[in-house]
Length: 285
Length: 172
Image (cartoon, rainbow over all chains, first blue to last red; front, side, top):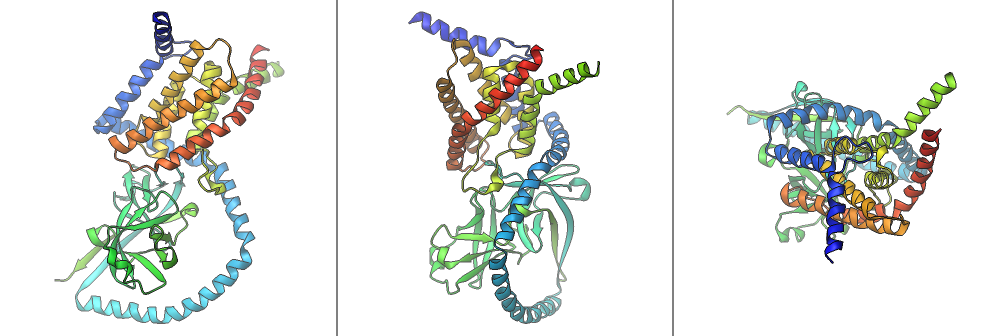
């Protein structure tokens, strides 16, 4: 019994300390080093932060180059998929286009009316857009995030909204000198205040780690208020983080009881270029 | 003379191939997510590190594994040093297995691999969730570990071929 314990100790000691096979460092040294890096990094120790920023700059660019072959196959796969259901999409789009043309007329009127009303109360919404290229979009089990090629040198700040066409897709969570990281709405850690229209209900949209979001933190009675088959989810602007009225996705009431599923308007797998938006509401009063 | 140069070039290319694959996979996160099979994902880096540090650690140094971990943290966006720690835990298990194993056996290696990835992923998930307050989908991790375990024999077969090629070249 004692000898088997000795064997175990010897094997463990040898595994940790022996620098076999031309290894420059022992395992124990490197394990300690990584623990030190984790601890110092979590306390925002300055030299570690500088190293992290430096590594970020190099690694994000290298990752973009290393991802080129995989991205090629990814794009090819998407193109093949699109070709396969071309006819089905065409028919669907034709119906949607007719509907949109009708809606556009009333929307134009609403935009003009909204503009006039804002002028009446001396309120202006000023927003600045910066276009950015998506360098890396890794579907990682940890975080659903994208790396953009704009950083602090382009006045990018933490919390800015990321918009694909006119749809909200995420927000900036980390800024480096030439690049930044944006957390996608589908990430488990993403939670944003939203407005459910046409019922005018405030709620919180949470990521699920999958390709859809979920409605959280709202009263149970809101389900009774559901009158429409299709509910559009917009940013509510609460907390002052996002511009109010940015479209996010839609809830189809058939799916409503199942996880309150929000289907995003934007396909997060196909983000090539996005807009980084900052806004300010000015008031004349 | 030129054939000698060519030989040396191929030799060093093959010798550093595992390191190259390691850095390529952490930079690129090879997981075939784009083929859109529901829930399908696996951790290629865990397979790569387990195989090479168990079979022949001289092709994959601990220093490069540590650096690859740092790169992975930056790409994925988790606290820096975290993946290095997890990768080095795999190395610890393989070093221990090497010390206690007299005759290598595929089944033993495979089961050890399952225990190792479950241990490493558990430490990773629990630490990220509890210490760093990053919300994690536990089920997805479990499925990822499952696929990583299932795919190990395929990569073992491929890496065995590669290792034989490297051994032949370096013995020339």
